[in-house]
Length: 376
Image (cartoon, rainbow, N blue to C red; front, side, top):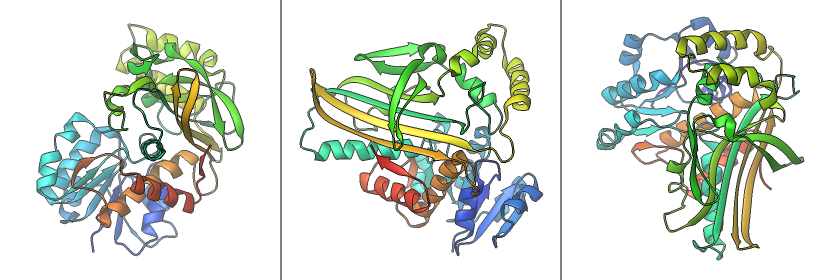
């Protein structure tokens, strides 16, 4: 029976680790600090080992699955280790060009290299594919109508603070994202910004508990996701954005942060110093609850007349089993691991499944695990 090798026992991993380790499948948790891995597996019968690359290389056998929940810089190294050992690979991060370049070799070996199977990216993909499938099955699909697609995700404290945000792990990733240009479609035209926070807008979403207004801004490059989501070039696509939600008042509370990020003198070293300062002042307290919201919607109109609309919403809070962010990221990763084990995914390099039936199954598994995903 193949062994699951999970690399990394960080804050976003524990619920998924425990879900897989509680099954009857062989499971090994590798972590740089052995005591941390042992703590995660405290009442679960599974193997914990200190992460050593030569020992990992020896341990990984053909058809095993290696999950990388390490910092993104390590994913390529892990994937290449999998190629050498004829093992499958899973991670939650965005697909990189270097990872895509492994597709032909992975296919030739019958290996599955799966990325973008966390929360965002991950669950958002599942929702998008399910919405498009419903629209296609409605009998109302007409590419000439005006289509608007918006997918927003955000994590913040359950109890809002003056800073309007807290950090689950190093703030450096958030700061780097603020320096990353964004590209999306608005009013039928491709739109770009060098500074995502300058494209901030007020955005009201319909959640299970009612409507709520947030601040929203585009995240990274949305354009490459149009065709994978089913919006072929013949579609009249008036809006398409994948973005980030923040609590109302976030932009005002972060003005000093924006000034530092915006400075031409701010290099990586300065960002790291700012990150360290923010971590000391605005990290989550040990028992503090977080909140995660994901809202994916598509509307179709003909002039002023509505034709079709659909949306998914997720609104979760941290609980005794883990933070909302950790549960949603790592449980989805664990479902991807099960799909690899059960031969449900194609060989080669891929992201979260686009097949609507598989997307529905994955979301149903998340709901069965205690998460709440609803159509609104």
